[in-house]
Image (cartoon, rainbow, N blue to C red; front, side, top):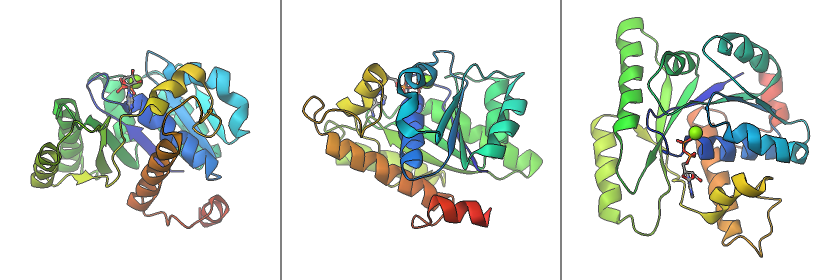
Length: 235
Ligand SMILES: Nc1ncnc2c1ncn2[C@@H]1O[C@H](COP(=O)(O)OP(=O)(O)O)[C@@H](O)[C@H]1O
Ligand SMILES: [Mg+2]
């Protein structure tokens, strides 16, 4: 089943947050999702320890994924999940090359505010290399993260123009800078188990995560209307 790798060689780009949002949203839509946690900070694994029961058996997290174990773990999870998501460390490594090489789709989180795109550019270069040298074409998109009110339309358009010049697809939905997306790691659970009286703009955060998941399904050519059951039958 499809593998989505989240990659940016820069730490703090928003990879782990984006993985968690997409994983929980796809599980909520009814898909079986497995996350391979290859991030040495193990945020997703720690989150899962406190949140496991909330999504029934639809979400599984595989901890301690390394260069030596990833092939076996990936094969196992692909056999049982509708989607496998890979959370990587923020560094250039052979694990990155492997996880990108195995992917059906690569999402490159880049912080919109800082326009700090170099870590993302490294991933785009790797994808270009795979295409030029090995004729392996992997669909990919940049997703802007931590976008806040300080990001001007002009700055945003500058990022868009840069990506367009390189012919890199930009996910239409941006991931906003939101308290809910930060707090979810601390308090565990999902955007739907959090207390709206304690977390500001929780409804907006839910809409944001849902819109991002719909964009990803569209990019992977999976009709947003297809239910998880339909997808399983097709596959
Ligand atoms: N959309 C967001 N809204 C608020 N905080 C965010 C958002 N994305 C990331 N962060 C915060 O930024 C820091 C780095 O994010 P993280 O997802 O761990 O990045 P990476 O996995 O690329 O290192 C964390 O403290 C996280 O809580
Ligand atoms: Mg991380």
